[in-house]
Length: 164
Image (tube, rainbow, N blue to C red; front, top):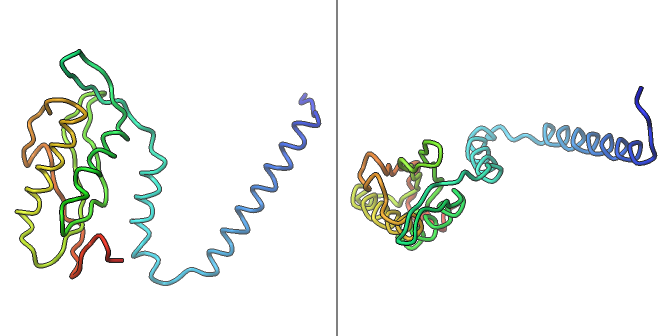
């Protein structure tokens, strides 16, 4: 038999009120759905998942010994390293890890058309390697096209950093 206390009843009321608020918001959003929602749904979902993702520990080594770094720290370091590269915008980063061992990374970018994509990808890869090396030490496996994949997800006519 469950014992009801004032705390549990007030908590249940807040929970019910929260559920009603979420249901009301969902109903309002369904009424306002634009027919083009599919175009942005994947992008929004990817951003939400990236924000909610727990951060895994990644093994690193420097001259003083081994240590672990948060995956979010690596993500931030890559963002900072790649951001100065002109004519591209980093959209997403996906690490390939085996437990806490770095195996590679997928960098998803938006680039400006009609610039040479291969040269831009090489520049992105070079900056990403520098960002990873600052945090992890010597990057293993070495940065190659297969260990650090740069995927062009979209192209824009103008500067992708300012394009909507």
